Picture: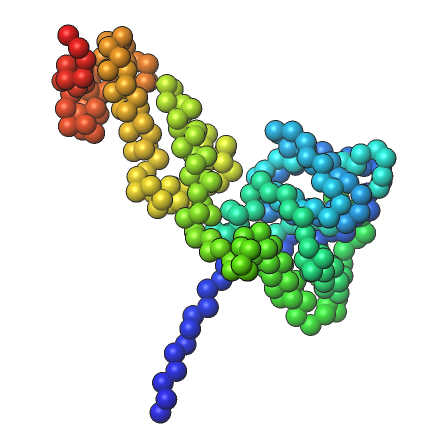
Length: 293
């Protein structure tokens, strides 16, 4: 009897839940207040322009472009007062690592990718009772007689759209797709955390603050940071402080007590113990070895 190998297929992107699917034709004076939610939202301008506002400023989303809002990212939309924008808005829950690729991105869709949007909308109309142009819709109701397999088709089409966008954005001139590793996909998050830690080296920073700034949960950032750096966030932060302490000791401007205070260690004694644990010698010995008499 022949033996066959069963290849376990790897999922790059898995949509866990669909929240809403909209196709809007907004009035030229349309404006929607700031909001944020714990799921992804993608917005595509099918006709005319849409003003997308965030805490950091405004982006003019021109016809043919799609913007991606990650979970817990504050945003708002408005028309420009001159034209009526027509937009697709799809919100969904997805926990796949690959979704980091879409953070802070505005992407021009190809005609083939736009077709996915229309296919998703058509399946949504056959599956859900969707009021036309209702930006306040919070829950889509299943039709009394929905189309067979409609929910799965919507899920599959959205996954295919996102994967196709990734492929298009990372394809080389030779046509070979650049492999995007999980490390690369999560690299931006780790860089953002490192920047926050460095910016707060002369103060204290809480994990809650990091979560608030990066828009990720504690468990997620703990796992990703340890995975990519080999250290916990606290270990990395303390090492940053000790490296900064070494620089200050070499400058020979501040006393050890002053350095401990500047770097927000609870006591000079705790600073000295931490310094020795990481460096193998006390701050006093380090200073003697690295400063001129």
